[in-house]
Length: 303
Image (cartoon, rainbow, N blue to C red; front, side, top):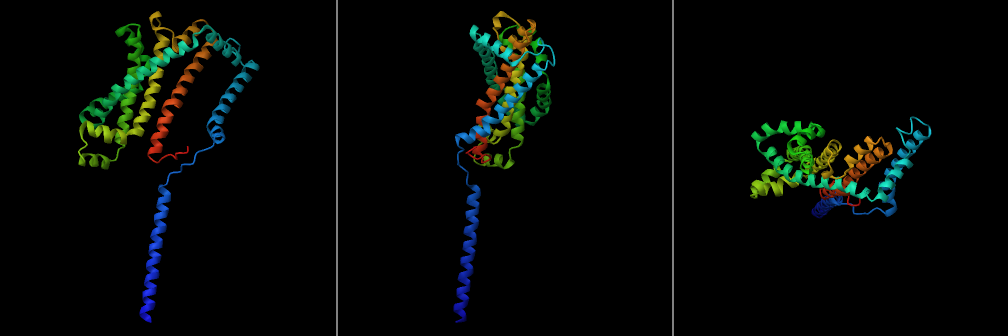
């Protein structure tokens, strides 16, 4: 009888341990599970569209308030309606799209070339110690150098043409992209590199399949900064350099309005430059960044 009781207690204890392990496993499964619930359209509009819209409306209200209170003269601070009319004039003249597209095409094409050049430079600097010791400080210094400083030199070297524009873009964007990749590679756990060498992923193969994917978050941050430098460098070049062969971009349009003392046109140029920068950020980099974070389990798929 005592033996039977002992056996029963043992089986009960064993069953409790199994149940505990099952509950722990269920808990771990719940932690690993990714929430796939999608927000409704109304919720998405409330969370993502309404806040920036309210921010824009607040800026417009403050702007209109300063204009109505005559904080300064109309020559220095036109109303939002005046700027809207300036945009309408460009639209009816058929030049608004061409002005924006001229700069956008230069900025994007220059950024893509900078991407092709900056990526291998970043890989070499990150992985080859003598090269890093020699070029690392140079890249950091170039990144901190204002883009407009390159314009006079580029004009003397290449003349006032598209080559000068692209040279300024590359000199501004390549160091940022390379430094972003270096920072991303520095954050890659050494275990990943050892695992790659174990399976034979060395050289270019290891860079493609191990280094770049592991360094992707830092690399993406460098790409975003590289685009910002590309856009800023282009605007600086267009502001300074003027030639009929260059066409009319946003920077040159802004400078022309300054020469005409047309403050409504100046504000319109600033708004268009800002709009393009925000649009590229929201349409290109934000979706890519969210996808990278979601694939790494750092962002719920419903967001």
